[in-house]
Every structure is written in structure tokens, then in C-alpha cells.
Length: 496
Ligand SMILES: Nc1nc2c(ncn2[C@@H]2O[C@H](COP(=O)(O)OP(=O)(O)OP(=O)(O)O)[C@@H](O)[C@H]2O)c(=O)[nH]1
Ligand SMILES: [Mg+2]
Image (cartoon, rainbow, N blue to C red; front, side, top):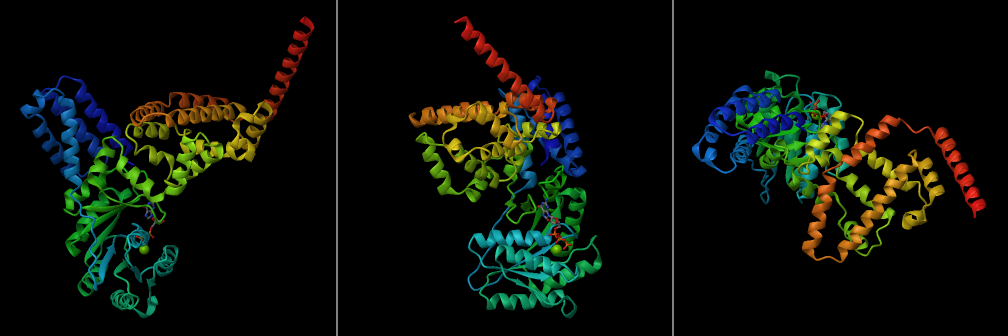
């Protein structure tokens, strides 16, 4: 998400921080910032106003006279970014004995139906009892799509045959049914159109007038950039939106929509869609987004995802085993599987401060993919016997060759894995005997090492230079080596 803008902004701010700051080079630097924003498809007026505000604050005497003016400017940019996108109130009020109605609207294909499902799932997990209403009678398959989603998340769906009903009627009957079933949130999935047109607006305004939803939420596709912002403006004029849900932020979006929607329409982004699966919905936090855009990671989201998807008991069990020095390769495999639940490695890396740019560089290199590495690790461990996973010390040369062959890797890689694992286990055991402060220091050291994946990159480069492993050639080479070793042994014997 937003790699280009992050790179351009950090470059512009970095340049400012390095040189001696004066009013004129602040203005030059801010011109570069403006360029970065426009390139990310931020609305022209929004980018201009933003830079004017930051410049005004930055050329203030206090900033220039301060000890670290460069850092102060980053601080101002951060604060202004947060102001640009916020504030946001995520609350959805649930009143006893009253049905909360949420109306979702948006252009065709923006992700309304999927987002209805995601939101229903999120609300259900928070203890609410939602019901989905299939109010899109435009597209024949829409009703079926919502029913399938409802089934997946265990939420009831109210629908009527498209040819014998109208959107308003379905919504009204849906509310009755929801009352009957004791639900407390009604989510209306309305129809989309290719463009904002009168027929669509009329249909939505009618639902709005009759159902009087507590919140009208616009679903916007972030990939469409300024078009999304313009449609938000039109929808807001007709419906008075309460919030925007920006979808497809997991894709190759430049960030323009996320940065401009609030400033152009006055309506905040409340949620973001970060994947097709129904658990890929996050609350939108302007401060976290600003941190991500400035390349400072987003640890809060990382921790939230971890608490949501990781199996706490399993984690506690693994930690205990680590501290007791009983952590096996089998546990390592389980830990990898837990990590995978949190999403693709590359998107996780972008949430860790300082790792975002490394993940970006990997994207550029193309063939460097941490998820592929995880797959290789899995393949190697799965090619080991249970006994080998518990006692990696028993893995000798011939076993190593077998594992490499079974997993389509090469023996050097298996060796690397075993070495790394040994190092890790040793460290864990060492940590078990340390005080909390020393343990913290060790973790920091480990983090620093992780932040410098130079060794890893070099290995990747070598691997891609070597090309895929030619197993026959490798076997011949090993045979040759064994023969030479045998001859050497004979020679040594004769000497003795
Ligand atoms: N990658 C990604 N895909 C998404 C996201 N949200 C929705 N999609 C995909 O976008 C496509 C359209 O989603 P729908 O939910 O059918 O969109 P819609 O607005 O209901 O479409 P209409 O009913 O035809 O107007 C589907 O393939 C979804 O899987 C998201 O956050 N990320
Ligand atoms: Mg739909």
C-alpha cells in the first residue's frame, strides 16, 4: 500500500533534514512534497492547501531555531496528515429495543456486497445480531451472492424474488423479519451503477426516506483514485453520508483517495478493506495511516491483527517450550503456520517500522518474496521425519541430501535452516536465564539483525544467479565429492 508516496515523501523530508534549513530550502522541499502528493493522485487543491499549511508552520521562527528542525518538519507533516484524514468516530450505536439500520451504497463493483459481509462479521464478533438485506434487485446474481456470504459468516439474509418486489419493499420487510428474529442491526446491500445517475440516486433516496438509516456508508474502490473522491462528493450531496469505506487498499493503490476523501467531502473514512476475504476489514485510523505513509510502520495494527487471529493457547505453549529449551522444528512449523494466518509476509513487514522500504525493495526485485521463503521452509521441515524434527542434531549429510531432494531445495539451504534453528534455540535458552531488562536488550539485538537482511538478500541473489537446482548435476557432483573423500581417506591410511 502506498509504496511510491512513502518513498517520495521520505526522500523529500530526508533532503530537508540533511541540509541546513532556511526558509528558501523549506519552500523547495515542500514543493517536492507537493509533487509526491500529486503523483499519488491526491486532489490538486488538497495537496496545495496541505503544503501551504505545513510551510507556514515550518518557516515559523521556533522551528528554524530548534535543535533539530528537520525532525520538527516531519512532525508537522505527520500532524497535518492526521488532520487531513480525521477525526473519525467508528462507533455504531446499538440501542436496546431499537433496530440500527446501516445503508451501504456505492458504484458498481466497488465492493458493497463483500463489505456488507465483512461488516456483519465484525459486528457479530463484537456481540451484535446483524441481518443482511438483499436490496440489490438490479443484478440477477446479487441476491445469491449475498446469501452465500451470509451462510459463510452465519448471519441471516433477507431476500425476496427480484421480479416481484422493489428495493424499498425488501428493506421494509427485512426490518420486520429482523425484529421477528431478534436481530439488532440491519445492513442494506443496495444496487450499484456504473456512474452516478438519477435512477440510482432516486432509488437510494427513497430507501433513505423510508428506512431512515442511522448511518449511510459509501463504499469506494481505492483503485479508482480521484473518481472515487468525485463519486463520494455526488453521493454525499444526495444522501448526507456518515462515512466512507475504502476498499481494495491491499492492491496497487497510490493513496490519492485515502488522502483526499475527507478534505474534499468532509466525510471521514471509517473502515478500509484490505483483501477479498471476509475478515479483511479494518477500522481506519488517520494516525496509523499517517505513520504508514511516512514509512514509520504501524505496530498498533500489527498487534491488533495478532491478538485477533493468533491462537493464544498455542502461542503460550510454544513460548513455554522455547524457554524450557524444548522448542522443536515441529513447533517452528506451527509458529510459521500461525504467522501465515496474519496475512502475507510482505504486508506484515510493511507494518514494522523500518521494514516497509525493505518490503518495497523486494517488490521491485520481483523474485524476492518472503512468502516463497516461508513455503521453502515449510517444504524442508515437512520433508523431515518426526524424529528429525524433534532432534535436528541427528540430521547428517545423507539425511540432509534426502531432505533437500524431497523439498526441491538444495542441501546448503537445509544446512542454513538447521544452523539458524540451532542459533535460535540457543538464544531462547539463554534468554530464559536472563532478567527482563537483559531479555529486552537481546530482543532489540535480534530486531537489529532482522532489520539488516543483507545476508538473506545475498543468498537470494546467488540462488537466482544459479537458477533452479539441476538435481542430476548435483547428484554427480556429490558422487564425485564422495569419491575424492574416499581416495583421500585411503591415502591417509597408507601414510599411517
Ligand atoms: N482485493 C480486494 N478485493 C475486494 C475488496 N473488497 C471487494 N473486493 C472484490 O471486488 C469485487 C466486487 O465486489 P462486490 O462486493 O461484488 O462489489 P459490489 O459493489 O457489491 O458490486 P455490484 O453489486 O455489482 O455493484 C469482488 O471480486 C470482491 O472480491 C478488498 O478490500 N480487496
Ligand atoms: Mg453487490
